[in-house]
Picture (cartoon, rainbow, N blue to C red):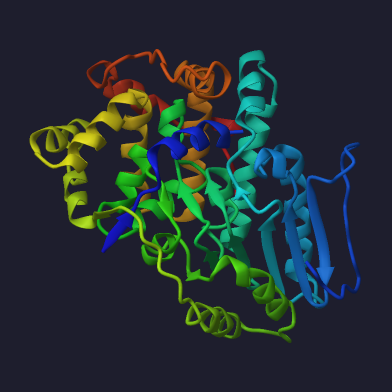
Length: 385
């Protein structure tokens, strides 16, 4: 098995930027919850399908609290509506499904003590859980950049359809955070140490690899996504098996060859260790170009984030999605109380100097006690699902 990496220069540029149908429609619904000329989320009933379009293309459809508060009640309504058989979610603009959460707004809220810093994560995680437990076929068309919060809107659903334009990543350790939105649940369930590798390094999977490793359930050529959507909304009272058969029929039509630079999964054994320090030791004693590059990558990440993330995945491997989300809410609130999240956002998104001053600055300075505290219950303010 191989992983394919996108061009480094282009990726660096995209990484800093990302933290920010033709239908015969019946019962057409569009909700507008802001004074902007275009709604941030389009919620449509197309035949017997509920269709969600994330509609912030200039922000690569980054998820904010307003959008979450539109999505959650509509999903709950469609789940029990006898006139709705399936739900489809997609992104507008052609570049991104959803490139993440509105991190800058959360950062400003955290600095000022605004409750948005609690509300955003709490309501986002409740939405992630709703998707993970959804009773009807839920199909995410992840055609384009899918990172952070966009992963939370897709990966827990039954069907995730990638294309050659899909770029998947969880790059949170670069901004003093951790791979949340249920990352502690799905990442350790990927083959071998792939999840740990993705979580610590923020490596970007592209195109067919997103489906090959199991992050996506199916792969369809981007130019056929519109036709697929029409066929999906044309299904009559479909079961999960009916949807799967349709998606598989499109997957068998793939003829394109994607020639890119690849890395063999055998290298990921280097991420088998009992600690982040152990992983770094493995990388530093290996002579491969892969090991050297990943060691350099980890050296740029928040030491606190690396240690939190390692334990998050180790514990999450044996937990339910609900328990993982409760754990991750405790972790995100610990990050709001700390320093690295604000410094990471400053470095990557605001000043864009990519020279964060982490505190503590080294792994050795991050004590087990400080990590333990991040996982401590929050009492009355704990997330409840």
